[in-house]
Length: 422
Image (cartoon, rainbow, N blue to C red; front, side):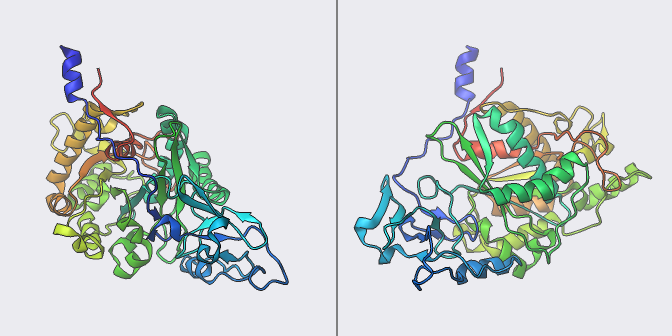
């Protein structure tokens, strides 16, 4: 009888039809285009051939200029496949993957036709499923991103027969030296991203051992939070949201006035890192609405959105047996590992509890969110496991439920099943 009920309540996302090829979304500039529209970087150069000499790539340098990166003046030429004979085009499973140039040298280095950055090898062969992170100032995006990627690489990937791999060695080096090592090896809290400090995205792929499952591209823009309510800044940095397959929407409890006042009172002389008041979560929703949601059908987005209450360790100061805000035995403080599937019972418990909490402390935010976002769930995470003091983490970093929103998004995108725990 139990097995029958379990089969009834277990949920499996409907299987998506596998297509021969897919439109590509560039993980750098987020332009969307047909796989046949790619261009290629030549695999060699010829000094006395103007077409194949090292040269400036104006589109690539225009992209780099947006992020304050130095221009590259000597790089191999770009080859436009429309100028290549059909017999010199190389296809794999019907997808244009390479060309042989006039010197009979083959290149398979595909580029985005709009920004001339390298495309992932899987582009066009699988859906361009891109996950983005948004949130207001001081919400902890940099710290959460670092903790999430670290957890995906060291824990989550193993639980789901997968690997979390940076797109290239430069991204790996930049992430390790500027984020992972300072936080996880030195215990130093990362500084908030400055709006004038424009950074290229961190791009990772979550790749399953099961080749029938498409890789999931994780694009993390370490965007300054105040930019999320600045229309001009949004145009530069948040175009990625429009073509995202899923969104992590981060909410800092300290940005909710009712909670901020109670926490400052409760924490007294040892508040740890308490941020000043910034943009409230509702203002980020309104900004996103004006930027792209208003232009959608019915002025709503279907993109699955995980609403993530960050810095959940702060809520220990509010816990009480009577549970005015948070009960002593709350799910918020209990770490959960999902293995091979989304544990639906655990997910439903945290989703319902956090939604009730947010409705109680910031009803206008929840109302605005659920008017514009049709597919939401609520989570709570602690990227560090404790509240830093004087920019330092005391003791071992122990993330709490940090990958749970990501696992729910895997479920919503049809990568994994949802099951009730026995």
